[in-house]
Structure formats: C-alpha cells, structure tokens
Length: 275
Length: 364
Image (cartoon, rainbow over all chains, first blue to last red; front, side):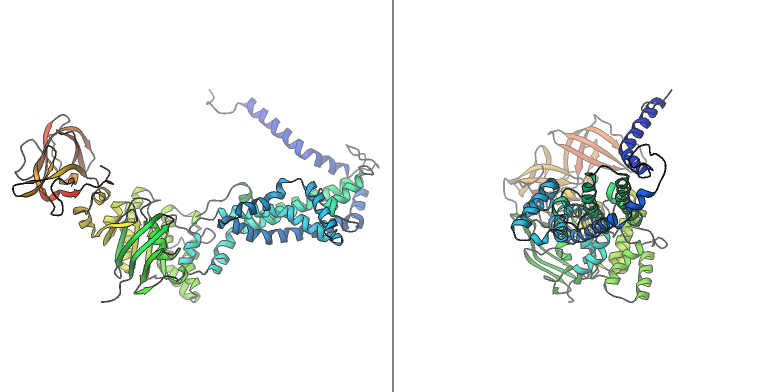
C-alpha cells in the first residue's frame, strides 16, 4: 500500500504535463522567433522554410548594431547612476526615521507604479516646455531611465541592508573599527550582492524598455527596442526575428554571468543564513 | 588605592518618559567578574550599550580606569563585547573574525597570526580557523566570538547573554569554561544574564537589576542566602513566600504568618501592623511527623504531591491555612516515609527565614 501523501504515478504524470505546458508557453515564442530567423523565405514562416543565415548578416549590420550599442551604453549609464543614487537613498530609508521619510519612499518607488508610457509623456512635456528641448535624445533618455530603473536598485540594496545582523556594526566598532572602516570592511562586502543585483535589474529594465524611450528618443539616438518597434510597421521580416534573438540573449547571458560570479541566486531566491 | 577598572556614576538612560536605566552606581575592580542579573527589560543590556558607547547616557558618567569615556566613540574605548547572537562577520573565516580587532589596531602581520593562533587555542578551536561562521556549530561560534573579543586584550570585557542560544548541556559546560578563562586572563568582565544559575556559578559579585536599578549587589552566596528584597529572593531561586504581619507583643515586635506559628523576630525598621513576606528556600525546609523544635518556624499541612527529581525529591504541601509550600529533600538513598495525603509538620530554623516588607509591586 502506498503511504498517504505520496504522489501516485498518475498524479506525477499530470504534474509533469502541466509543468511542461507552462515551460512551452513561456519559452515557445522565443524558440519560434529563433527558428524563424533562419528562414530562407522572405516571409516569417514557422516552421521555417529552408535554412539561411542571410537575415543574421542583415541583423548584424550597422543599421542594427548601432542602436544595439546605443542601448547598451544607455543601459550601463542608467545602471551606474541608479546604483549611485540608490545607495545613499537606501541607507537613509533603512537606517533612519526622519520627517518626510514616507514621502521620500513614495517618491522613490513611485515610478514603479506609474505606467512608463505616462512617465514618458510627462517627461517629454517637461523637456519641451521647460526649455530643455535640446536634451531630448541621450540626456533625456538617461534621465528617464534612471527614474524608472532606480527603484529596483533601491529595493535590492534596502533588502540586503535589512538582512544585516543587527549587532555586526556594533561588534566591529567595539573591535576598534571607525565608522568608515566599518562600512569598508563589514557593510560593503555584505551588501555587495544587493548592489550587483540592483545594477543588473536596472540595466535589464533600461535595456528592455520601450514605453519611455518611445517619447524621448530622436533619430541617431534610438534604443534598439524603439528601432524594432519602428521597423514593425513594415511587417515582421525575419531580420527582426534575428535582432530579437540578440536582444533576448544579452540580458540572459548577463544574468547567468553575474549569477556565476556572485551567487546572485541566493539573493534572488532566499537570503543565505547569516552568522 | 588604584582606580577601579570600571566606575558607573548615577548612570541613567531615558527613552521619552521611560527610564531603561534609572540611576545606577557600580564599581568594578580590576580583574573582577560582575554579573548583571535580571528579567528581560530590566535595563541590563542597555547598560552594556552605555558602557560600550553604542549610545550616550541621559545622565551620569562611565569611567574606565578613572577616566570618563563619555564622548569617546566605541572604537576608541578598548572594550570587548560578546553579543547574544555572537555577531560574527559572516563573510570572514573564524580566524579572520578573530584577527579583525588586531587588524584595526594595525599590528604587524606576524603578531596578528601568532595572537590569533593563541586565541583560537585558548577557546579550543585550533584547526577550525578556516571555517566560516555558517560552518560552525552554535557552541563553536560562541567560542569564536569570545576569542575575537578577548584577543584585543580589552580593558573590560562585556558579555551579553552569550550562553542563551546554547542547549542546556553546552551551556553548563561553557559557563565553567568562560569563568575559568576569565580568571586565567584576569580580564575585568561584566556579564549580563537572566539565568540565576549562571550568575551564581560564574561571578565574583552579582548585581540583581529590576526596573533599571540595582536592587542588590553582593557575592553569590550573600545574594542567595540573604536576599534584600522579595524581588531578589524570587529571582535568585525557587522560594516559598508566606504572607505575614508584624505584631507588637511581649519581647518586642514579632512576625505572625497567619496560622503559621511560632512567630519570628521582626526587622527593626518595620512597625506594628506592617504587612510582610516571609521567604524560605525549599531546601532549608524540613518535614516531620513529630512536632518540630521550639522556636522554629513551623506549620501543619497536608502533602499534595511528591515529585521524584533524581538528586532530590520535591514535596508540595497545602498548609492548613490554605497557603502552598514546597520542601526539597536530598536523595540520600533511604526510603522516604512521606506520601501524598499525609499530614505533616513543615518547619525551618528561624535563621533560614527572611522577612521583607510587603510591597505593592510584589508578585504575591
């Protein structure tokens, strides 16, 4: 007789089917897009007709590589600036209780709740009417992306700060470490993963954004996703499929690399036990 | 006379209207082991924070070797602290944890290595220096924390309930070990605990704290045998408390405890009619079928339960006046002729009984 609570083989099979279906549903579109990019035909057929790399040669031409490079630069800048602003913000929000703390918290995390589209329209109007028309393009994009990416960095850094055992800094102080050396030798190494995770999330959020960039880009200073959207007007050519695969692969490779280097998984799924 | 290692003068810490530490004066001699004993919330951990300099007192002074350390930041105070949760640095090995304080003092590498090795030997952790805190057991982490605080040879060592996270057997081992280590190194130590057993075993002197004040300070035996208040008596061990009243009679004031007779001499500061508590440790009480000696504190009662505890038997009685009493008898190997339902005499020599004025805050 089977023990109570042990899955029967039939329940196990059902579970496998459901899980497989979920994965197929999530990964299917990506796999189809990848397959389509190898079409020989002029149309985006699935299953692909024949095999050819000609769409990939087009996708890797300056027409697409320039906006891709622009997106990478934009993402990196937004990510670095976000972390730079998020660090002092997270310290203030986690460590101190002051007047206006809740307002600051709401302002910091607010952009997470607003549709980026609305933020984009708002920023566009701000730049137009406040006399910063010249800023539209890279400077406006950087400002906008920092606005929507910083909340992620504030969140991850706050979480890692809150996860510090309470007496650690007292212990370091009693052992003779000045405030500065406590930050350097104790706090910094322990919140490193939060900082890296924040930078990564900020980068990915910036890299995948369309809604905000749509309003703040200008010719020659266009992120890859805006470029893709524009190209879609002429139909979904296999070139787009190839470009899409590249834009999916970049964040994926980044996450895997960072996870290997820092054990980000611990941060993303569960804090490792301290002490 | 040399300055005391640590001198607390009228120390006070208020949070709004609440005084966590409400005026403490305490002098600790060089090399002495003093325990702050009290229930949670009595201000003992706050006192450690004030001494270590994690926060400033509202009033009063902290003097280390004669010099006030108010305004001196914690990292210049030369005070080692072992925290209840050990607060080991999780990203460093045991050896790196121990080395931290020496590194902060910028000692030469060779000396750091030597002293870390010695310190780990001292706490019996040699060979485990490369382990991270999460690869060590609770007791081993405790030893790392101890080594880390002692290796800097602090003027004063503060221990904040360091044993409370260990299981019973380890706790009993560690309290002897810590006390021995402290005596060997002669580090002036202040130990905080809510465990009276730890306090009695480890300390040169025990300060019993209540409501942010020191209620009594003295050698462990003094505190146990001659508690100064009902609170101390109840906190320092299991105790029988009987209600009584002072009555004037021939031969001065005597304490009468309900139907429990005969009377005890009343402390001189209590007047006629004062309500009192009589405190009596269970191991000082005797049980007998015969009438006890004249002049002894005695009452008749009925045995309710006999609990066999191995080393002792605990006998619970209901006295004729309805009060409950406990007597503890050592297990001598002889059979005991007391069984539930027996009617017996519960008695104690008068010197075993302590009389306190009944206070409104007393539990009974």
